[in-house]
Image 1: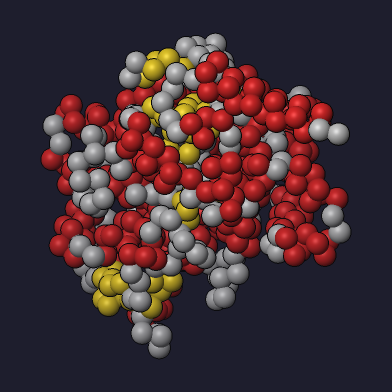
Image 2: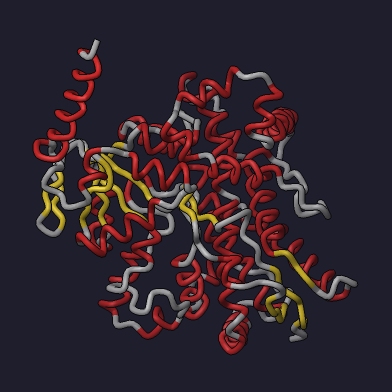
Length: 493
């Protein structure tokens, strides 16, 4: 009668002993409970909703820069180690099924586990997101920037007190840009007065459920077989996003002529059939639509929140912009904007505060890694968090302060140190493929707004932009980012 329970308890004790004393990571410091079970991680990430990062931060304060945060994973909070963890060239870095399962998109580039498979797929997508490709679509980005500027002008002249919702504007710009580049036509989110942005809503819905799916990946299969009414209840935006996908694919199939789109590149007839598999195209289109809109808009609105509160910096930036934008409505030339020292410093600081991807994990396939004397064997899971590195006091003294001048006043050695620690798009072979598109939008829209408008915050506090949850990307405590401004003036020269 008691045989099975006794055996179960015995096996559990043996597993605990193994993980504490015989496991390859047993020498790595950290809490004993986290070494034997993932229950602490489950509680803080699934039950509390993306809060484990703050527990990890406490672990680092107690145990040092290298800690064991679950039975099979080491977390490193050391800026100089990040490039070693991510690696580039021929050094192989796999992902883990556990770290990507929350997306439910197995063929999407960020979800591919195997290093070599990822390399082949990335090579296929690289032409769509190279710097040259993004330079070619700058007129498209400029169109969207001009439309946002028109909204600011309309608010200034309208009867709503000049108030603008930055989240709606910036997610609309990012979503319209990426849909037009991907399919050849945007969906008019910026032209919709109600800003019904199903792409952003769906992305946020998916990231809010990420940790649950990460711990229970079989839920993805279950969702695929549930009746539509159940799916609509569990994921209200999924039905809308699927209909949107169908509509966009119809648009791409009927497109005649015009610029080459991402779909054209993925469907290139010169590629072998397996490279054009429907699931690969579907999953990557899904991830492109989501990843190219929400993090970019979040960087812009959180950056604007800080910048609007520094009017002297705003005016200095406008003076600098006059050199490449002679009139307030001049186009914002990305390649020239990148060369402006103050603007570059402001963008760097915005990226440091950006709500991009938080904790990433890599598996060094055949290398032994060493950090602060701690040996991490091949095949171990190593992770790091951009937010902790961006707030690390070594490369960034007084890290909680939004201070673009840190980039202007730094010595050459210090500037290199800070640049290496700035990782909003990660590093190595698996860095964000869309970083040129994201930075182009950030530079161009920021330049257009600063050059043309005077703003002040409206019904917005620090709580509205506080990073409170790690759901793959940074999220506020509740709901969405909320930054509203009032347009109080328009530059005349």
